[in-house]
Amino acid sequence: MTASSATPGAAPLAAPGAAPLAAPLATDMGLPDYVVRRPKGFYHSLNPATKLALAALEVVAAFAIPGWLGPGPVLAVLVATALASRTMRSLLLIGLAALPLVVSIMVVNLFLLPGASDPIGRLGPLAPTWSGLWFGLLTTARLLAFSSAVALAYVTTPVDDLLADLSRRGLGRRGVFVVGAAVQMVPRTIERVGEIMDAQRARGMDTEGRIWRRARGLVPLAAPVVFGALAEVEERTMALESRAFTAPGRQTLLRVPPDRSIDRALRWLALAGVVAIAALRLTGRLG
Amino acid sequence: MTASGSRRLDPAPAVPSIEFEAVSFAYPDGTVALDGVSLRVEPGELVAIVGQNGSGKSTLVRHLDGLLRPTSGRVLLGDRDIRRAHVAELAGRVGLAFQNPDRQLFAGRASTEVGFGPRNLGLRGAPLEDRVAAALEAVGLSADVASNPYDLGYSRRKLLALASVLAMRTPILVLDEPTTGQDARGVARVRAVVAAAAGEGRTVVAISHDMRFVAECFRRVIVMRAGRVVLDGAPESVFGEAAWPELRATYLEPPLPAVAGARLGLGATPTVSALVAALAAAAGGGR
Image: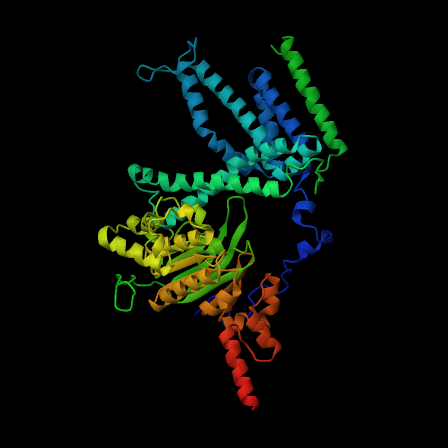
């Protein structure tokens, strides 16, 4: 037995003076992380409803304001917020997931925009147009503004904070459960698929070979996803019932996300912005 | 079957050593799961890895079959750097039994499930059937050869998942929490599997929170905390009184015989048999 970074004979290997891991739990009167969670910055600390209101304003601005005056500033604000809240990497990953849609938007508009008559050149029977390119880029910018606004609110808001806030604002238990299940479904499924794929690859399933070989791996991947999800639904239902999910009366929330005056101000501002853009749009003053 | 009742199987291929050279790994969200781990496991060693949840145990072993690749550092099987090796290729050398059986079981018959790995490795016909039968026998599920895996209880599904990895006859066997959810009979099965693998000269690496299982089945214990190896040695030293502060900082308790032996002044007694022997020796000495 050898361990090049370890002294045989069970000598402690931790760096001298390293802080014991118990310390963080011992603070805050021994309350767990769920109760005493500290946000990582200003945007993270905003109330979930505030972040949703800001996202709504950004989406409305990106789509209702004509030309680049809508999506351009919105994207700039979103990038600045993502950098400040250190979520740029997550947003870029989500943006990558939208890549196939972006490509299809660009291809369709570049070659098939109705009424476009300003060709860039010719590619066989196809003629890409400047108008198509411009419209495709604008549509892509709006799509990215939409996905980034929603994604920013999502990645900076713990799901339990969102659910607790919805509950406090009067959404019933079933409604909160439905929202929670829907919000968590995608990341849960992604996590489940990742682990199942790892387990099957560890048993020699080829995910890097030819397409027909990879196709044979669909059943070993799909079956545990489906069976696991069904089993989880059953277990979760029983767990909820056993914890008096359907009992009458109002729940006591273990933790309520703060709702400060800055949150209320920002929500009013977002509402005013949405109303103003809608009014200007409806009266034709935005062009 | 041989006269002794065990099946005659092809011998396991040559067992390579395992070497982690200053391996660090960070997940895409920036979480550093391994922080410069260096250790070497000789062929045929029985190694248990213990540590609190999130200490990097599972991340470490997933490097062995290429499911994860080091952010920095190298992992060597024998003298081969596995950085560029395909997982499907490494699966023939490292068998990894995952913690949650429901993340891998997919087939409608136990025999199909167990045959999935060896079939992926190219085995067909009678040798494949022999492998499947031997693996099911090893975990006590011979009678369930035609059962649907989802009709089995959790502990038996877990044993079935273990059988599906045993059937691959890899020179290195990695078990992630093999005794979780097992009753005494199930734990005895797992112990027998470890002992049989050891008897064949194979390397066994197991992650476990079951300190009694660790002390009684493994000759080397590695304790991890925050992505680092903090203790590394024989059970007698890792569970010895001098290491208790380090264990407790990692939220681990030494096995009861070790505590009893220390309290009685009998020295290092990590297992029941060691404690009994020490008691007998002490009683004999006192006469």
